[in-house]
Image (cartoon, rainbow, N blue to C red; front, side):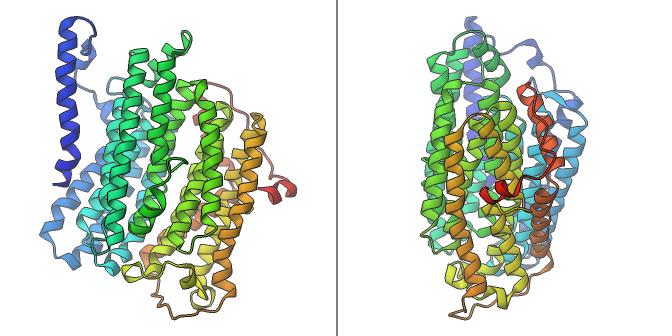
Length: 536
């Protein structure tokens, strides 16, 4: 049923497109069926989508095994199969990287940019699977379709990062969205979870319509849906108003996915009701993929009229997200508003010059994924049965009752603030440096002020853990191997990006240079000055 629900709309759209294409081709106005479409893809084409093939196969295996196994025994076994699928997906990404180039009639492009986001999104899925091992057993949720949907959702977000055809991007976006719509409502016994799924579905469908309408307007303005061909058509003369409106509509659709203001209304309620590991997934993987698509649209298509839209969205996201987070008492809602604020910080990179902003945004996406996934891994473990312990009061005294768990959460929160020696510090530093070098002084000032505001509610959680006595007894179960491994991986990534950011940033810069075809300044060779550290 799930596969039919995912494939059915795509099949109907494909059939309709085929009939329309035949009619137009017969009329001689547009040739939708050039000679190359009548040939079969070669082996290199399949290598260039090998991670998606591997993830899909493992997802199908999980779904086929699920009805054949006892519900309790299947929990960890199917989780292991899904985890092995994610690891195999990372291995397939290495094989994909050995065959860069275009595939499937210039609809997919394998380059440093797409490889970066493939590794990031599949690694996110692997960590989420690890943090779900214990969670699924404690919450007594059937595992089969959960892990299958997680793998299918990862297929969508991975494909988004390598697709350079707007129609294919839309299909990948829908594969990801349908999976997360269902996953958001997986706590079937909780009314809040059902509400979050329904809200996410309704508002997500509305946002998708904006994106698709933007694609239609862009096709009307340029006659193309391939991003490279659109860029060439727009550079050949003045940018038509229809193209600018089309890009703005696509920004609205993707702005919903990244939870950027003013398209953020769904975020707190959905994050509060959805299963905690899925919130970790939703706040990182689809967001990273949507930012990857935005990077291609903003910096490759390069419609200058979008600059002020991005500027305003970045300022609003930082300000509204941080101010709203100040008054939250539920940790998941607090992190939801934090996610909105971080979307704003990331959008600052989009407003900067392409040669500077692309690599800064890529590095920020990786750093944010590590620290936010780690925070939600801790929240997932601590929430216990039915997610009863998710308020700030529940975290009082955690530093005494579970020092290791409190220390891990503290490091993730300090990274979210942007404290030195963590990935969050360099993420903000590079984004704000790109903005300053692009002469976006006021936007940088807004970002720095909001970073100071945001420090309050992150430190508030730390104060609760270490300086307040527990007012009620909260049972803390031992952290088993899988969630411990998930938290450890996030900790290592967060600290590594804060101590040795050079290798990741250099790769991001080289990928950005290939993406925008412009020279990229070298990464700073030394650590920022103490004054800068105090600021960011």
